[in-house]
Length: 321
Image 1 (cartoon, rainbow, N blue to C red):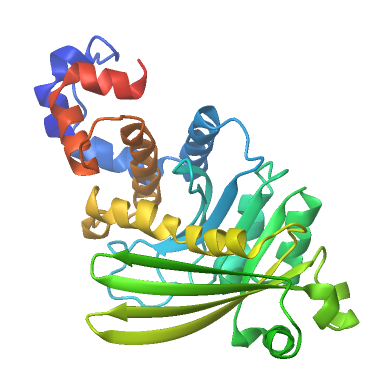
Image 2 (image 1 turned 135 degrees about the horizontal axis):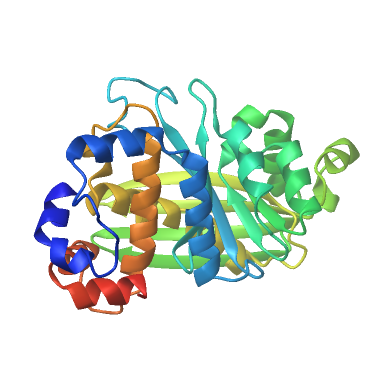
């Protein structure tokens, strides 16, 4: 940051007031450590909403990422773990929350959702977020949910998986994909929740209408693996084709956000860890990623970032200044 400032000092003076020149490394360090992360988080959310004025009709994916550079030797959620609300189709962050050390995503998901207008949106969360209180909050907020179900849900997992054994599906879909040496076949089935689940579970999960089963057969380098995943959903008109797309779309947060933070911005290599420096830098990277993605040039994210550092007019265009 200091070197960029020194090399672009004359140009920066046209858009910033710099009465004391370019701040030193120690000044940047202290500011990032002390700045209230909620202030930058609100800037990130405002930027996302400025570029996307409504979540209605959108898929909203919630997932967490551990910033490994903050505490590289710790395991699990020890260290800095950030939950992000991500609109996959538009590739925008519209909210986030830091997860407390030795806690998990369950405590952060309600905090992120309560700050968003999810009316008409469909929220997808992995098995960690498959909780009755979270489903209640989503439906109360005017949204729908697609929640992954795993065996740690006990009775719910058993009834959902048994339902697909003994009841005929309402809809089914098959998709095939071949990409980079990987061949995958996905079979998706939809089942009416009221036809197969007991009244206790239906009363427990607000708005629950559909059950989803996705069986995938993946072949990589001649080795084939099989996986079966189950989901519950409040979407009344969910088709098997849509459910397949929604479940697959959830992982865009891994491929288009978390992966790019690591590859384009080398987040895991950062050793910032004192005070609020790590979470503030994470937020600044996401804001920068918003801007880089606005460009339609046929360049990789890395090259767009490099061009922005070299070309002042290109940078101004990205920043909409």
